[in-house]
Image (cartoon, rainbow, N blue to C red; front, side, top):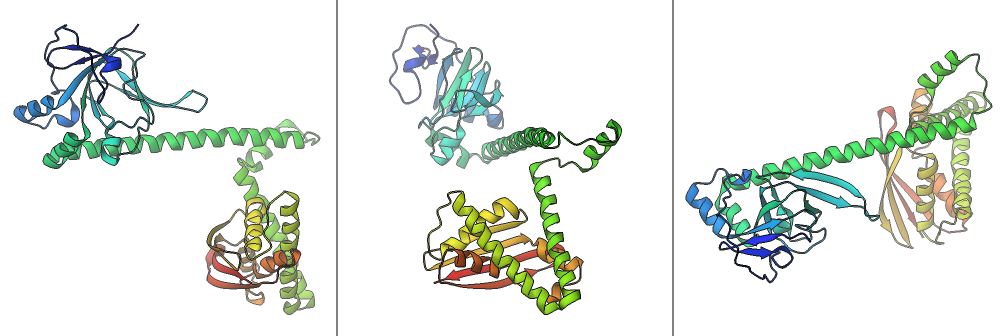
Length: 372
């Protein structure tokens, strides 16, 4: 059986009964006096001030296998690791370690609940026999207010934690994207299994230069192809039959696209209420599946009035600019899309568009409002 000990007034206490804020059973084993002089955030304190801090603390000894603090625990004590090694751990729902940070002598931990009053964000477990000092949240906060040097040290530690976690998030995201990219390549290789290249050298060259590196890369390339078909078709219609006809074709295409995307949403089981909200939902499903350059923000979502802000890059305006046909078309171009979605569901409503930006490289912002 492993034990942790709380050393208070030179007495040895059982760890399971010595956690801060709990009852403690004492034994008569004596321990030498310990100091917080090695704690990093307290190094600026004069000896007399440090002694007063030590007097406000409890001294605890933990052995491997005995958690010092546990995830989501409601205690708010702050801890200083005097000797030994410990590890900060976050567990997944499956019980696997998904993140950790090692602690050594002089490190502080557990300060977040003392500052914000929320539950513990991680567990801390000893890797070796550890001597730990705990301080109640109230005297800790008093110390920060009274000693600017300690406050600065704590802030520096918090900034370091944020930077470390930011790096972990980036590394994790990059790893996920790398796995997704390999999966995408494997899936596409299955689709392309019947392709026969002139030789392996040509195949390797083309795959390296042109094969999508990620799902995002592939989606954007497909989006560019769609935009090219749209723009070139309208340019051809305008040159042969007049620009008024080209504008009419553009409106018809978007209206029918709204109807088509509504049918697809229904087939996928999307719940479309028969009111002003439905065209907004249809548009969001279209963004998910076919319009990656658009971002959106739903501003109002009521049965009689629904409003969405669409921003980002308009591939349609971008190709229209490139082909020099933008001035011949009606903007905002998505009004007929929302109208087509409403038509498909037999919803009687009015759609308005307030164009905010139609800038270089297709920069786009528009507020679309659907009312009944």
